Image 1 (spheres, one colour):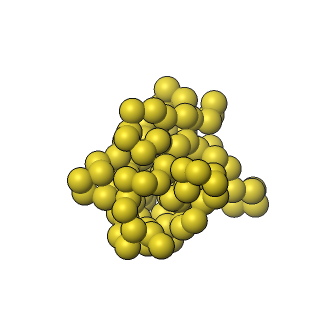
Image 2: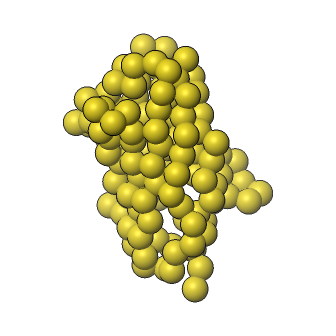
Length: 119
């Protein structure tokens, strides 16, 4: 089973940028779709986006489309979430997750990273 460790995040000003990283180990990384989710205080976890195995296809939630970019480096077993034009409503704990390409089940989750957007 794949094991995921996140890094990055922190505090950003509105309009600023942050990048999150998610490093995988334990199972062939390239066999998984990689998703990003977030959970704001008092709210349910919500889908942010997903990148397919080769990295040539992504899907984003409407709330982040045009501002966030997901990429992956299969040679480094790492997926990234570049967050631009950040808004206070982007404040949340962000999670990466590994999705089985055949079942659609998210098999593993990162530990979560706090992102706070505030002036």
